[in-house]
Length: 307
Image (tube, rainbow, N blue to C red):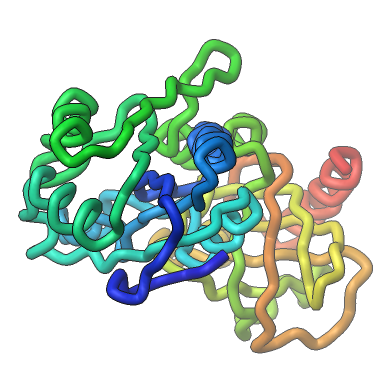
């Protein structure tokens, strides 16, 4: 997969193109990509995906608290390459760009810069200033500028249309099973191991404290069964996300830490990946550290039962 951050350097033969944030690269997105690949094979063309960075809502709303990402830009690159895209264009999203009308976007970027031949979009796709570029308007542009357009209907799971918003909602409730079902893979978070207060070690369950990209969505506070990837090896573990109320009165002081089973290596400053499997329980304040330790023992048993 060729990656471009400058469209002036882009070149593809007979481009079959789609546009969007593709946050999560879930099966609904993959359905669009697979249709692109079929068209590209039919017309002897190449698949091109145009996405935006930073996420448009970060720029338009200027309040990052309003949305968290399912995938960082690096995670998105990996997933899109796995999906089989030939060319990925990461277009810089700015306030100035957000004011561009859909007509100017089609004419000046898709037609003049990218030389579009075929456009494939999802069932609810809209773009341009105030999201005014609906399928009907794009259809008119296709006729005017001589490219074909195809709209892909939504993908359903258990009679529910899959969307990034629905996946975010499930994760924010701690419903990992539903989120993973909608994603088509297990949700993960990657970050660097940093030093904490070593409470887990005192309790007999040492944890790796993870410093992650703060734009990334972290599931609801609680205890989770998780796989942990360290140096390309996968381990079992249990993760705590929350404020540790038994020893901390500051609910804003959130930690993201994982106890890796049967593991005793020094991994400070290393990047590791936590892969969520299932939520075990809510975070809870205990009467003493002994009570907390006893509960953690039970949590480990429940986590192993899940595996």
